[in-house]
Length: 248
Ligand SMILES: NC(=O)c1ccc[n+]([C@@H]2O[C@H](COP(=O)([O-])OP(=O)(O)OC[C@H]3O[C@@H](n4cnc5c(N)ncnc54)[C@H](O)[C@@H]3O)[C@@H](O)[C@H]2O)c1
Image (cartoon, rainbow, N blue to C red; front, side, top):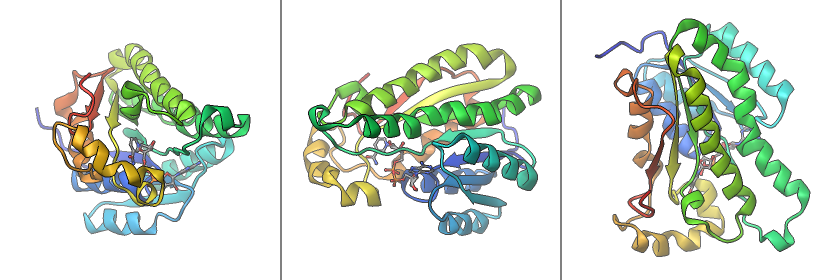
């Protein structure tokens, strides 16, 4: 069944750059109006969304702050009226060995990568349930499946995203809301290009069934599908999109 997305609204956290920007633009081209919650200016993403003929809204938002998320949610409600699709994408991935890791860094990773799902779910799930339709898609990582060094906080947070997805899916399926996770492999973004991950691009590509470096554009089709009417009976799932690095 094909149902128009016109009038439907998506929120993408961390949509000012990288994977989140690619997600925002694809959702706009699919017909969603798009709101961006990011610490950085989302002007570039807003322009790309509007070029697709959709409405865009952005406000500086720290996903690790209850107050900031509450203010953002009020702004989206005023500007776009509703939220039908929530993409929990914002995340950080500092590479630190566990022996050197301070509690503050552990906590910050959890606050941004995991606890933000609580804040945004609380803000937008009730409206989806009331309207009997919604999609929540969160971003995990296949580092959860593989386990790589210097990522204990990150890997734990991304595993928890999968647990959150499975349990929430079981609660809200009867209300027409699906909850799924996309798990990318190592993706080329400005952040990975500038970080220690860049040294791993070629090595990891050779371990993948499809031996090239993953790009944000490799992920957008899966999000588009999971947000669509065609995926209405798929929930609680994790889709690994990493060129066949892990085979879950
Ligand atoms: N790039 C990869 O290799 C890769 C692999 C697997 C999973 N992921 C996940 O994909 C997501 C996006 O990664 P990316 O590579 O595009 O990252 P990125 O750094 O390019 O973009 C992340 C965005 O999130 C925003 N952000 C960070 N902290 C925030 C906060 N507290 N509040 C609001 N916004 C915040 C940043 O400003 C940035 O715009 C993350 O969850 C990441 O863990 C990335």
